[in-house]
Image 1 (cartoon, helix red, strand yellow):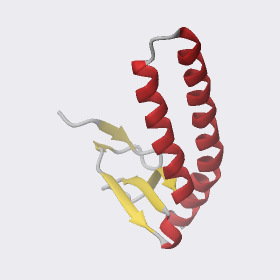
Image 2: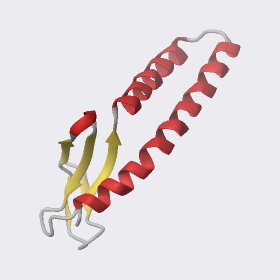
Image 3: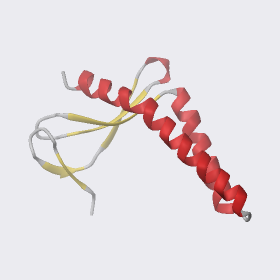
Length: 104
């Protein structure tokens, strides 16, 4: 069974179909689109800088999973949350801007 989503615009319940729109300068916008009203909901916008941070966060998680010493695990966990917060701060204004642009 495919996951369902409710459109925040018209209330239609539909299966989730992820779509991407590539823009200049390496920006990639990820969104879902309601089949009933065509409203688009952006869930991510990545730039080359954000993708590098995402690559780093995957590396930190992998190292954390293998860490045997508590000190190293704590350091990696702190780095993970710092990276996650930084990605969120960079991505949030881009998501809001892309939502406005796609639904004009």
